[in-house]
Each structure stands twice: as C-alpha cells, then as structure tokens.
Length: 166
Image (cartoon, helix red, strand yellow):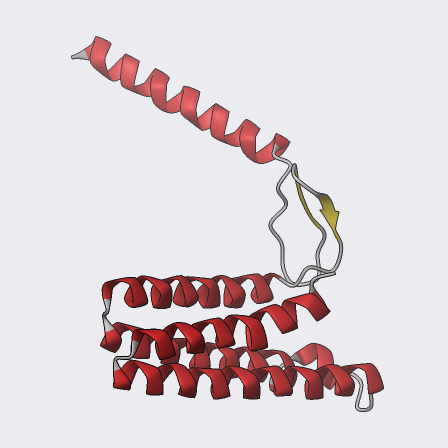
C-alpha cells in the first residue's frame, strides 16, 4: 500500500513539474484584449483582440455545422445554425461597438465610426445571407441551398476577412 502511494505521489509530482515548466516556458501567452500573443507558427501578433477570436470561432463552427447539415439534408439544423450565425454577429457588433469600454473613452473617433459603419454593413449582409439560407432550407432545394451557403461565405465571411485579416 505504501509503495503504490509513493508511486502515485511521484507521478503526480512529475506531471505537476512538467505542467509548471510548460506554463513557464510555453511560447503561448494568454491575456486580455489587446495583449501580445505569440505562437510558433507566426510569431507575434500585436493588438489581437481575444474576444474577436472567440466570436469568430463560434461563427466558424456554425458555418461548418451548416455544411454538415447540407450534406445530411438536415434542414432544421441548417436553419438553427443560420440563426446562431445571425445572433452571434449581432452580439459581436454590440460587444465591440455599443458596450465596449475602449470606445467610450473617446467620444469622437472618426476611425472607429468608419469601422463601426463598415462592420454594421457586414452584419446586415450576414443577416441578408442567413435569410436567404433559411428560405432555401425551407424549400429543401439543394441547389438553392448550396447557392445561399456560398453566398454567405463570399458576401459576408470572405469580404470581411479580406478587409480585416491583412
């Protein structure tokens, strides 16, 4: 019994030390909004907004789920995920432009106002494309559904990424 406990304690200690070393030596820095984040693939990213990553990952999952729904002819799932995209994009807009403490610090910020209008246009385009996607899902027409899906990707996702992911 004593030997088993000693082995368990040794393993726990070993993995604890490995975990601490990984934390201390890791080339990933997880911080709050605006902090520098580094990783082995691309080096340093200054000014990366971590909440943006969270929102866009959610959008990415929903887009992948829509594709899965298209492949399985699961029209209710497609509509559910399309609604999720619409809700997430509105939530992102509100979080970054309506409720953001960063933007409240300066009353007039022309660059921010341009970005806000620009992003509002992308959210409107997302909602337009989501409506088209849901209409196609209701009709259960695979060709129309695929066209609506590619419209969402091209007119909302790719256009925004082309501008903001340089």
